[in-house]
Amino acid sequence: MASEELNTGTNEEKPKNFLEEIIEADIKSEKHGGRVLTRFPPEPNGYLHIGHAKSICLNFGLAQKYGGKTNLRFDDTNPVKEDIEYVNSIKEDIQWLGFNWANEFYASDYFDQLYLWAEELIKKGYAYVDDQSQEEIRVNRGTVTQPGKESPWRDRSAEENLDLFRRMRAGEFKDGEKVLRAKIDMAHPNMLLRDPIMYRIIHSEHHRTGDKWCIYPMYDYAHGQSDSIENITHSICTLEFDVHRPLYDWFIEKLEIFPSKQYEFARLNLSYTVMSKRKLLQLVQEKVVMGWDDPRMPTICGLRRRGYTPEAIRYFADKVGVAKRDNVIDLSLLEFCLREDLNKRVERRMAVLNPLKVVITNYPENQSEELEAINNPEDESAGKRMIPFSREIYIEQEDFMENPPKKFFRLAPGKEVRLRYAYFIKCNDVIKDENGNIVELHCTYDPASRGGNSPDGRKVQGTIHWVSIPHAVKAEVRLFDRLFSNPDPNNVPEGVDWKSSLNPDSLKVIEGLIEPSLQNASVLDKFQFERIGYFCVDSDTTSKKLVFNRTATLKDTWAKIAGK
RNA sequence: UGUCCUGUAGUGUAAUUGGCAACACGUCUGACUCUGGAUCAGAAGAGUCCAGGUUCGACCCCUGGCAGGACAACCA
Figure 1: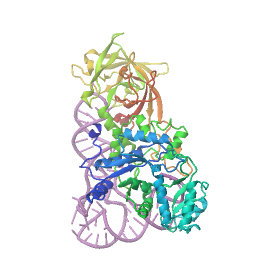
Figure 2: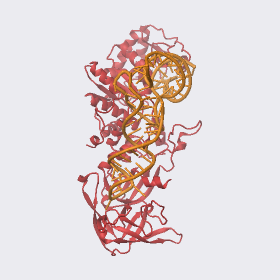
Figure 3: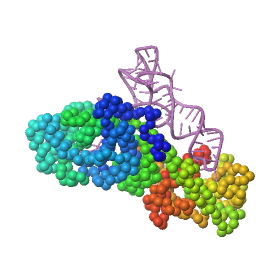
Figure 4: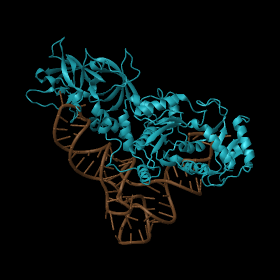
């Protein structure tokens, strides 16, 4: 429902991106009988992040739009890097985002077929076993400006190659002793076509195939054929694989198998964020953050814990667009998408983060009452709730100024404001401690303004939020901010640690006071704390302690004015 | 330095495939409001990386530059 409101996904009015144009052309020309089958191919060696979310929304979204399906395929060709821990988190994240795959596959499902095809290429003279060391291979590959040198083993007979390759598989050789290479062109301007390695020897247990194999296919030898085996029609990946496409096509052509086609789009970059798995891992390992799901992380699980919704992320993926040029998206766009969603669906509550005590001197002692509050002004069906009011309340420190500037609409000596859903109050006295700090305000209220309106029709400029002291509940509140203070954390001068621009204030933990109706909130419940921001219940919450994460602040026009 | 990809308001994405640039976010006004939120109305902001060429006409086609990115793991 919310996604409809957010108008994500298919929309006839919207201009098409280049992939939609390609697909529509293919459908029109009956290329695969109008069939569309995409795939999302993560390597299970890390957690998914917002960049993957773009890819997921693209792959699944395109298939959905054109009546096709999407496979989930784990690209698990390197047993030393991959683990099932990641497999499970990846599946969970994709489902949470709201997508269902047609099939769950693994590149390792195809190891037998890939092996057979390798023998076929050997027999056709398109592949050979190379005895050169890793170092020799590297050196002989040449450089970007100089052609490579052919391996002395390049012209072995098919029989010898076949024998050697079978013995590689049988485990007769040690890691690195031999590799299987495609025989293409050692002088090719595209380095990837200089006899790329197809198989390497790794005596290591694979998380799915166990010890069945001691040779494993390289990405280039596995990916296109895996697509082909699944009859993928549109294999969509990021720009850096552009150089790989000739190789992708080469194997498919030589093997004469289903011609899947690869298309590349520009990956997502977000300002104030790092996205590389390596750097994210480093943040986790060095305990810069609490873990992969730290609410400051751009990981899907981090965003989830932070309070993001699948709808907001899908809306975001839709808004960033798809093209081939490098891009950096403003973090503010992500936040816009979040607010757009949460504003409409999430209930409002009152909470005071930096309390200032207010005594309403003309309100009877030991009295309290319940006042009616609207749960969500954007959604009448969210109903109403009662909130307790009493003689002593907390307001926000920032909502009072002893010497207010011109446009300050909040409380000040002699000024009157409305307490949201309660009464008008006027400030009469400012109580200070011996150091001159304001510790308490003495105010009087207008009993006739109960509910927030005065019968004489007089207006107040400001409405502030509050919480009744005897009824307030304490909660830990975690105020998150961007992880980096540098808009482009990857761009640091030579020799400077990329972590040097970490924002020291990315997390502030405070004790807040919340209205009692929040008492029984459960993990992941989301609210708008009026005039403050969106918050969600953190998984660290226990029966004894409530913990809230600040998902995002509200737009704060006053902060902008005050900052000038 | 070789090959490939990409250059359109601050940030993204468009431009009916050649008819003088639109939309969103952001920014700035104003209205409204029991959230300085939301909503509504409006404004500013690029002449399309540069230089030539083709054309009646170029963001779009051609040539040459320039800038950014990718590629020299037995990673994906």
